[in-house]
Image 1 (cartoon, one colour):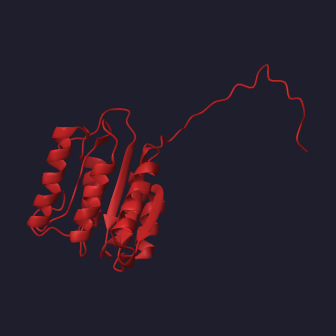
Image 2 (cartoon, rainbow, N blue to C red):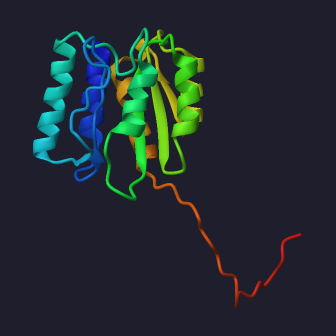
Image 3 (cartoon, helix red, strand yellow):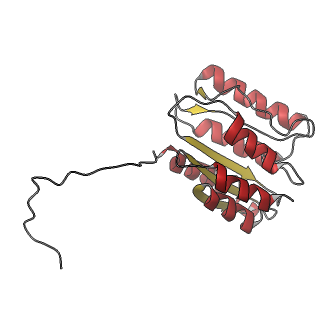
Length: 191
């Protein structure tokens, strides 16, 4: 829990000012506990609210960001379908887990159908408890990247993994690109 809390704090600190974000966690009373009703731009007020949300979740005995036993599919459903976001924005989700959820296969099937071309879900597995088949399967289903940070790597390895996922998540997903080659003259054609 302490690792997950530190990783989420790193995540918040690493976002660029103005980037829209939200946090959803898991605790015993509420599997989807969003920090905000919809994604908000990062600024001093939202930064402070997000940090307080993470600390309150940890103080309440919350689990990792993706829960250990059941509820991961419900959490992802809440993030991918229920949380509001601005029209036309691309959804980027970075999931952080230190467990192997019992409903991992169901979560992967759900994400396969729910994460469309406007969505990318990446996963960071921390410690020995993160199941490679879940972390890699979920990120593949979400068209994102998987990363692992071993406990022996310490805080620096965790922070590096989270920052890499943020960098990847901030890249826009380009689609429906058309190129007009009219008037282009090739000097030399490749074999």
